[in-house]
Image (cartoon, rainbow over all chains, first blue to last red; front, side, top):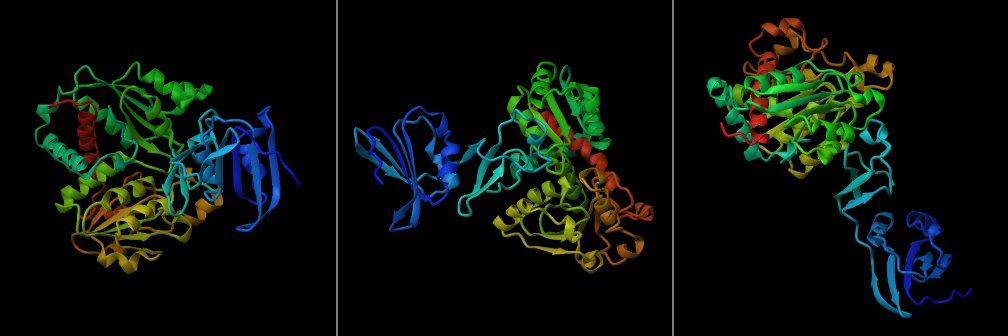
Length: 139
Length: 304
């Protein structure tokens, strides 16, 4: 299967097989009008199978937030057909409106307009807690 | 401007300074009776309270200030669906300081985000209650003459008991403190409360048996099983009488034990205990007013 290479944009590589749609939804890629390719179950020497997303546009989003979903993901920034940067996303210090607090006693359970903000409380355990009620985030 | 939503918002040095200030107010009340003249405290209580609200109000009056606010959500625009953010923006126009109690956890954090005057968390659901903790710390200091080197037993509802959560967070910063956590399995301390214990390598044990640990305790902090925290009435009824402190149990304790309770109590401390010199809970209530006076002075940056 051949997918055209991109000139200016982003290639998100080493996505766990089956997780591409989660990232697609998280980055709201369905709203873009540029070409977006989702490659599922590609053969990988390192992972066996992996997913890849290619976006033929420069997105103005904090890709480090992907670190919450999977810090092993590789992000490649492409400019004029060349890869100019390759990195793993870091765990973000806070994540907003990516996950929702499930504690029925949390203020977010009755105030629908409040952003659901989680803070990184333990980097080694990849642990986030609600800014308001301190409940642990469930992935 | 600063807010107090959790006891961790205050350093050990600041807590010590507040305790010193409260003791000075107790000794020299006349020196402070005009300290907050022309200042207004708003008490926003979305949930019922006797001691916390009235001690805040008494504290502000004794400092020469004034008080406005509401004592139930139904008496405010919250009953019409107004958000915490909008209420706080409004109250910030009318008061110099806000003390807020809310049944939902984290509501004071939201308030602090939108307020243009200092916000004090006066209790948010089962989460935090920092001014009760300041009260407890002043009580322990007054009764024991120290805040470190002691064994503190916490008994009852340790899951939803916000006073317990804040007290653990505060006391684990003092050297030589050991905790004994006494509760039914279903009401054990949540994992996030144990984080400071583990990080600070503070010794603690968990047990379901009050009597066996009683002789070792310097402080016994009793709590009520709170009906309002349960979604299931059957669970409440099953657990509500888990621990009742009786004279027979108190006989096992040290002669200088201090029995504390944030109040209100239901039946977890037998009335006969009230006469025992180790019963400290009513003195604790009085100390609550003085420490809140000290906190108001600090947040309003009043030099007195």
